[in-house]
Length: 377
Image (cartoon, rainbow, N blue to C red; front, side, top):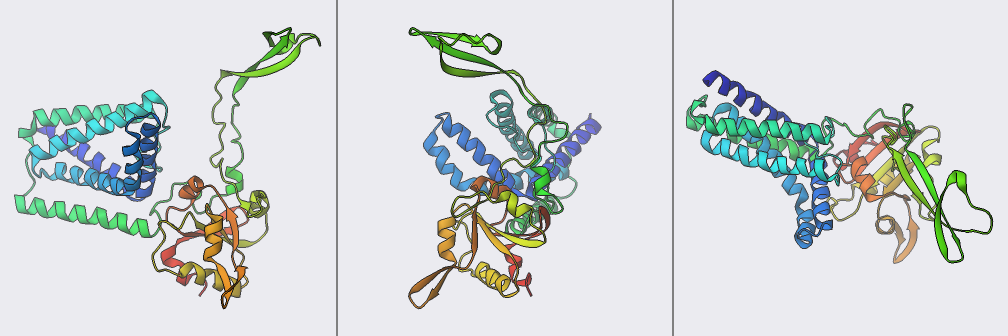
């Protein structure tokens, strides 16, 4: 039995560490997923006030959850405070199982993000995984006496402190820079224009249509092949899904850029020849404090005749940030401003702000704000 308990403990511990580290390379991805849960629960009138307030702490919750997951995995492997560890493991698995069951049975959220964006799992896969881990946690509680620490208490405590420090340091680095492993659609080397196209093997949804016509105050429904004569007046049309299609959503289906005047310039920008830069600024609420690196970057680009466009969800505020003044007179903005949806920018730019080097529709390179001063040297 001890051998079997050891195998279960090692496998469970390693899976927890792996799951935590996969999310630690992009903690904002988990934060945005948690925001989806808060919004879904708030929209369902489950403590909407509390859910809205929790959205303000989504990133802190994500960092804590990732850290707890990794540290629990390490604690399980080394046998640190084994009774507390297995009970915390059970509580965490109950929580995870609740989340994955909510995703599976309500359909209000497409995925739980258990392994981040790098290893996407279907709702049934994540739910099955959590049920297995939940059983493993119960098993380890029952046979906790067979768990033997790998070292003395002080040494195992040192391991826990080191593991906690390292995973927090990793997340701090990623939040200032960019994900260590980029698994998003806008990663380096991807062609945005190609990914906006419908997949080659797409199967479209099949619909049937019912037409409603009215005559003498009486409304009736007719199929498309049985439209009534001209004595009837068209009133409505109903679309009915007959068969769900598959693979019919492009990997990038919401990337759209508009000018200040409201004109869509997405295709024109992506189809241009040569290199240019896109500076993504989601908003100014979570911007680096007392930092002028973006202004210096734009001035450097202008001096070196580099084409640079600022893409933001707050065009008016961002235009004000880059106002050129002469004395007390505003001469206008010196940045080319484009507008994009904030949710899209959250995927494009995990760090606010982020700079992209583009070659037509191809992503050649990307940098976080911490690297801006070295780009045009």
